[in-house]
Figure 1: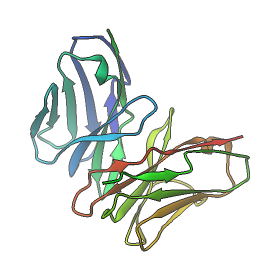
Figure 2 (figure 1 turned 135 degrees about the vertical axis):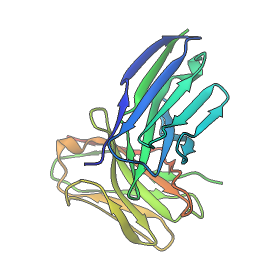
Figure 3 (figure 1 turned 60 degrees about the horizontal axis):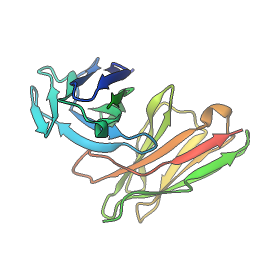
Figure 4 (figure 1 turned 90 degrees about the horizontal axis):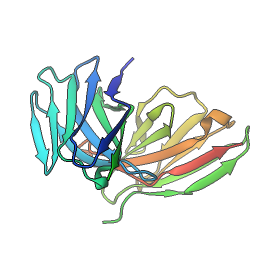
Amino acid sequence: GQQVMQIPQYQHVQEGEDFTTYCNSSTTLSNIQWYKQRPGGHPVFLIQLVKSGEVKKQKRLTFQFGEAKKNSSLHITATQTTDVGTYFCAGLQGGKLIFGQGTELSVKP
Amino acid sequence: KAGVTQTPRYLIKTRGQQVTLSCSPISGHRSVSWYQQTPGQGLQFLFEYFSETQRNKGNFPGRFSGRQFSNSRSEMNVSTLELGDSALYLCASRRTDNYEQYFGPGTRLTVT
């Protein structure tokens, strides 16, 4: 069936280190979205990528969409304790948004 | 603009019972989707409603059903509850010209 795989499942970093999470789909995606869920909270939309090879930046966050529109990545430069949470990618396939399993990021001050 | 609201926020039910959860979307959003979130399975898509019609459906048994009213408010119902139905149920709304989802705070359902 439709699957979106996300790795790693967990990532522990020291404050100031970089962090990257990767998302892969077995099929071509119409677009990919990224969400952040703080502990005890609900997912909050971060960004949407639509075009092949697209790169978008939000302050310390860099999002990429692969050329084949099957993979994506989120990179955080110089993590801060406020970056703690679970980051989900979600791929749009046939009108359905399929979420990856998420990467839980913890940041040690 | 008020966000997505869900009621109740917490619920404890017994196996075999049924439950109805409610979601009010952001004003002007006509699409409402429901998701089940568990530690083991992540965020699983249940169904999406638009203009009172189910548009898409995930891979859940028929015990899970939903509906949408003319004011775009939505309800989901789970009948004959099982222990495995314990989860956070999230509702999300969106505009019809964009797939960006706005999530509510969720309903935490515990089945004992």
